[in-house]
Image (cartoon, rainbow, N blue to C red):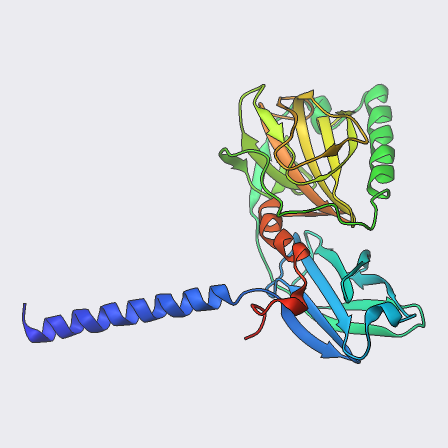
Length: 318
């Protein structure tokens, strides 16, 4: 091999290794973004936010210890929705979410205090196309017409509204969220869906391929808020993890838990089935934050930020 060729190969390899190291170093530094405003330090993650994703927010006073303050923050508002905050160490923490269909652009995240003061932070939402899916199901599942079915659908919706309004402010998560099955994903999150050619709501979760009877485990610690059969969802389990965070497990064959049960990560809560509006046996797993469906796989990653005090870690520093 001549010297010129050797030198070219060496320089090419050096460039590749350098690029890899820079990319790895950048990835390692990913975490909270820090902003100071009105004697408060605000942290949020992730930095690059897209529709169908959660946004973890934390803040603390730079002036005095938060427990001495009278103007504790009550709520935060983002994209015309209200989200809860909880006391956390010397500050507060909450999780917001970007609904599917949100247009890309800058949106105001506002945090209100009892005395009327507030913080306003611009958050950028980036565009993301989740794609489209066409499915064929029985006519009565695509467009219900029978009075008894319409009556049940209405009862289901009222019941779900009650469930989603009952979450506590205490966060029950004690470790990162993890998927309830380890199998192939047959339908990803966010797809624009057409049933029998007619547009319906985007896919609010992910579908795991599995045979009837395969055990399903809880994705994280929480309280079982619902365990019953619904028209579209079939046999459904909803777990409340506090702070308006819920995980959903749909189309089950059997349910192995009861409302009020405290379940832990890895605990069996049911088995895979084909109940409800389905084209075959599978598990639909969803994550909902204050009424907004978010990408469960992204939330597996984002949930780690709920277990951190950002002002006590250094990885957000650049």
